[in-house]
Each structure stands twice: as structure tokens, then as C-alpha cells.
Length: 176
Image (cartoon, rainbow, N blue to C red; front, side):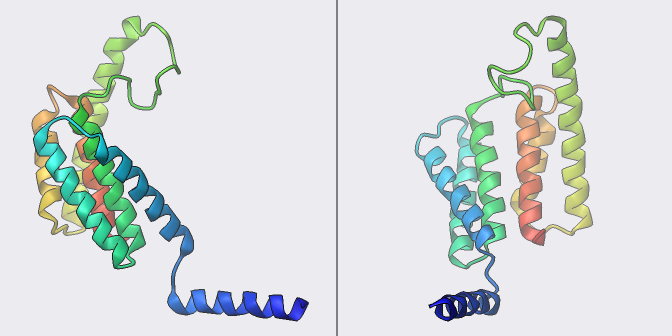
């Protein structure tokens, strides 16, 4: 019995190596797509960002079917960020969840909004530099960066999310 179990495990290990499938990546991509499906069902907000998110959702599903799990997970991550940006300006400062952090932002509120603006500017610059460095060919990345630049002054939270989505797409395109 012991030999049979060891044999089956060796056979499964050999098959997974022969297929070159990383089951962790497949599970990560499947979880991202499941979350994306849930968010997409009740999504509302700015139409332009929603259409980009729907396009990315379709691309992520195609990548998953083609067994490009890393690409599918990154595209799903970008779509989730776009759905979040479509809903509006984030209410809580980046890095804080509701119910955590100081109760009264008081004087810190001004500092946090200024820091958010500078973080958004830095992230937009990084996305643009990575697109150029890795010779990104995806036109959606260029559109996301241009949209983030346009929103930096008035909506730094949305600009931050758009830049994050652009970086996720750049990562999906290059494969790491």
C-alpha cells in the first residue's frame, strides 16, 4: 500500500513538472477572477472606467483559458482597481481601512491629502517610466497613464488607482 501511494505521488509530481503548471498560480488566478466576477455584477460608476474594466475582465478570462495564469491574475487585479476607481474617489487614506487609524483626522487630513497627491504623482511617473523601459505595447496602458495624469490635481485617489492598474497591466505584459 505504501509503495502504491508513493508511486502515485511520484507520478503526480512528474505530471505536474511535465505540464509545467504551477497550481498556486492557477489558484491565485482563479480566486482573482472569482472576486472580479462578484465585483463586476454590482459595479456602478463612471462609464469610461467601467468599459475599460469590462475589457480587462474579458482579457483576463481569455488568458485564464489559455493557461496564462500569471497574466490572468494581473489583468484581473487591474480590472478590480478600475472598478474601484469607477466607484469614486477613495474615502479613506491609502493604507488605512475603515475602522483603523485615528478617529479624527483633524490637522492630519490636510497632510494626508497632500501625501496622497505626491504618492499618486510618484506612481504615475513610475508607470510611465516602466512602460517606456519595458517597451510596453498595450494601448490601454497608455490610456490609463494619460487619464491618471489628467486627474492628478483634482482626484489624486483615482489617479493613484489608475496608475496601479497600469502597473499591473505592464506586469502582465512582461510576465513578472
